[in-house]
Image (cartoon, rainbow, N blue to C red; front, side, top):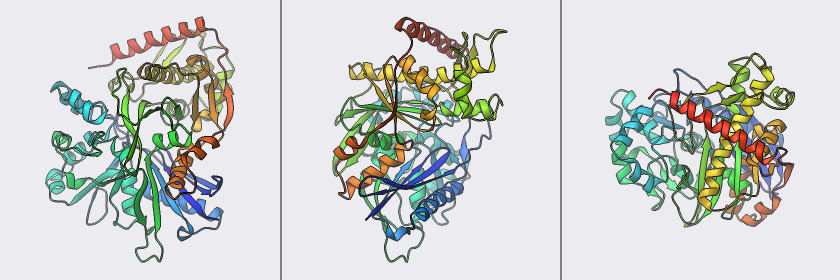
Amino acid sequence: MGALLAVDHGTTRTKALVLDEDLQIRAQAAVHLRQQYPHSGWVEQDPLEIVEVTRRAISTCLAQVHLRPEDLSGLGLANQGETVVVWERATGMPVRPAIVWQDRRTTEMCAVLAAQGCEPEVRRRTGLRLDPYFSATKIRWILDDIEAGQARAEHGELLAGTTDTWLLWKLSGGAIHVTDVSTASRTLLMNIHTLEWDPWLLDLFKIPRTLLPALSPSIGPGVDLAMDDPGAARRVPVLALAVDQQAALFGHGCHRPGMAKVTYGTGAFALMHAGTTAVPSQHGLLTTVAWGRAGHIEYALDGGVFVAGAAVQWLADRLALLPSVQSSTELASAVPDSGGVVVVPSLAGLAAPYWDPRARGAVFGLTLATTRAHLVRATLEGIAHQVDDVMDAMAKDAGVRLELIRVDGGPSQNDALMQIQADVLGIPVEVATMEEATAFGVGAMAGVACGWWPPEVVEAAWRPRARFLPRISEAARRAQRRSWAEAVAQVRAWAPR
């Protein structure tokens, strides 16, 4: 029986799993990836560690089922999205650390471009906002930061890419410089209507075309990996490439317009399938490529929350309020409510639908009666309210009332958070049986590419682990939403401009 390798290179972990021809997971492994915070608002990773962690995840996973790379029928690779690396073409060495999607260092650069009136045209071409979240200003910052960066880029001495491009370059021994259209749609450099690097955008950010990878479909990219051995007798076909959130959308079986999912991880990311037309959002969301396949393109509405699981990690690691992230479930469940405390966990700015990179986190409503449990529960509620902000905007854009949402990711295993999420949304929340919907999704894409199954089989395979129903009254829900809205307004008013 054949086997596909699916790799999800995430922000804090790289996961790998093996799928067989029956769409069953035969093996899986995960390796932790470190982040660095050299300055306030900066988030970086070591590009060489990214490669090493990915290799370890792959080798550990394959060893579980006694497979070698040459035994694989193909590979699917999902990536972080907007995180970027710039490296030397000749040596393959990065010129500086990777700038992670959460990084806010280019806030002022985006503000200057917005003040020049560029944003409407940028949004028309890309479906995105002028925000430091995306890749273009990160690349621009790196070229400005290193000596003779612009000249070296123009002379073809440097290459740039998101982490999928970087990994493929290293795993192929420098033979492949490519990304797919879903990932490219997150850069502020690809026109989502023409599916090409846009000359006007390249000129706006002063990024040479020679710096960027070739563009491929998401399903069936048509490249092969020698897996570090250029002399290998058999190369591994790369059958699927996608942004992690788009891969999760596919893995959830959300293949028809109006179907939506939320993936909880470091952040929380909601996507709704929007059909085959790129329709601009009117309520603060993004229009993005879902995936492309053999000349056929599908789009999604996208709303991201920058800090979700990272807020709980922050409570444990930075504030020492929790002995572990897992203990947040028990502690939040120890109190019936937050005791009037509201936490706005905008520790890396506010994303959709506010797009306020200067916003910072805040805690409101503290009294002498406030306990650690109240703070933990309020943090979980803050995550849930941010997701509700996105889902509300999504329902308005789509002109529909959402009946339920499908969710996955590590924090989705926190039953306290999921119950709070159902209460805040006022609709059922269905948690996927598999925690790793992103890796499963890109593996499922690979299976479609090699003809093992049609997309309908992936949709039919979806199963919920648990279903959480709202437990609070509509009046109580509305009261919580009013308090949340007031807290967000306070945060945005306080943030320095």
